[in-house]
Image (cartoon, rainbow, N blue to C red; front, side, top):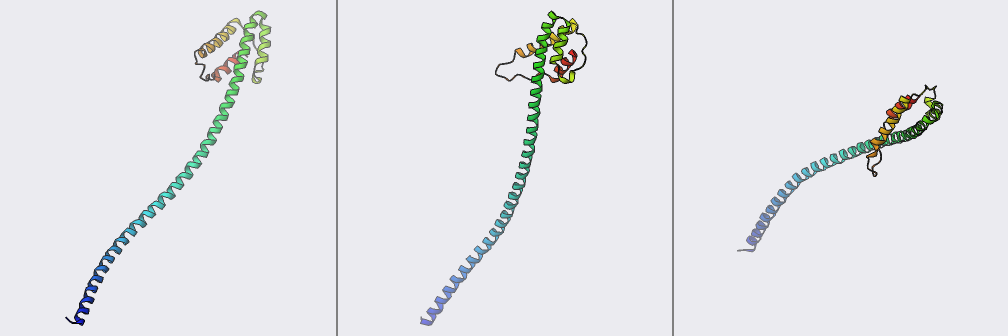
Amino acid sequence: MSGLALAALTVAVFSLANMAWCAVLWWRLRRLGAEAAGLEEASRRLEAAVTSGRELLEQLRSELVVGERALERRTEMARRRVEELGRLCEAAARLARRLEGAGDTGDDGLQMATAQDAPPSAATPRARETPERRERMRSNAEAGRSANAGRVAAEEPAPPDLEALRAALEELA
């Protein structure tokens, strides 16, 4: 074999190896192109999910603000009701004590007691109290006490019925 044949054979082997290597690279590049398209699609979906998540987060924040405002309003209303119920309960207790003592002093003492304890809206001329009416008021007050007597001390007592208290105070008017 001559030097020229050996050189031709070497060039042919290197050419075949080069072509095989190029085929492998072409196959890898094609696979990477397909993977790149998949990665781009996944990137688009991820970006859409992040955008949607941000929008939902903003909606939740705005709903939280609305909920906090509603809670503040309800809390303030509850505080006002508690204060009003406390005043009504105190007035009812004073009236009940004075009603018990009014039996000894007569109707004039009762008139004076109810005028002092009545809320400002009830400042109207009062009718004469009858013994039946006083007894009915006393039994209503006792029924309210017995209903609350069974409560556990650790629990916060339930507020009395506001409308019933108003009706009882108006009945005294």
